[in-house]
Length: 359
Ligand code: ADP
Ligand code: CIR
Image 1 (tube, rainbow, N blue to C red):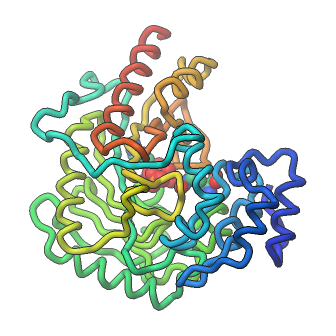
Image 2 (spheres, rainbow, N blue to C red; image 1 turned 60 degrees about the horizontal axis):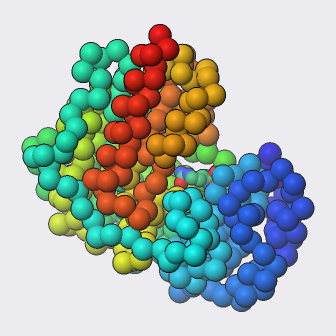
């Protein structure tokens, strides 16, 4: 699945994906010779080219998306290929123009949802994350070590004033023991450098420099620094109380926004490294035990119908264990934050009902 050679030029790359019959990525689906010729000479201010955007998808033919934006400007410079991919992923009709509403977190006092699993039988934990990028900085394919260090500095300075439930401490990966890293990762709090898709996109260059994690005492509020995105703001806890998780997240986003300026475009919402995360950048997930439903083909049908995505227990591109799945909203662009969470809530409620009917 993974290429053992590094393609040297754009024509080699295009040739390789075009010939790969079993490659089903969105990049392959929409990249034509015509687009390649139109974009081959283009370069962003940060020096990003089309090669930088598609390298991971060429080297990993089993990619689902297969393309990243090498910097925020890539979303305009390479729109000829990124736009159709964005529309397909976020379920926007091919003839419609891409648009995104202003951020709207809803009325936190009247959310219309509470605990998804009050009996505590099925949902093990609930997590919601958003991604944010610093405005003036590039993404991993063309990011320098110095810039990653600068971002770590401005981000950790922003942590300094966090108070109340958000008060915590920053733990750089540099100097952290392997045992601590492995334990935090196994407990679903920390990231590692094992994702070959991200690796091929330059995501682990100069590892572990500039990376780290901030968390509060209970590890219910966490921020990943310089993993896939410049920042991942995370709220999580055991059980199914999605309202509590969401309120904490919104509070955290508002506090971070007071201190940092994030990359944003009216058309695309908040800009992230992967086009699948644009817009709200929000992924609301539960770890849910559904041994009956998950063994049936209805599981895929209900996920498609409710626009959900199922992942394995250790995140994207991992396997499920013991009938436990990570179930989350798939769409993040073209709807508001509160709508994205409500989409996930409706789907998870249906899944719980179906599992109960089967057991
Ligand atoms: P992301 O959510 O940032 O897109 P991943 O799918 O790789 O990325 O998940 C990151 C980590 O978060 C993984 O360790 C995963 O197991 C954990 N995780 C995701 N959802 C939940 C959840 N509902 N409860 C506990 N851990 C979760
Ligand atoms: C792929 O195309 O499958 C990978 N590049 C991952 C795509 C979506 N995931 C993500 O943004 N984490």
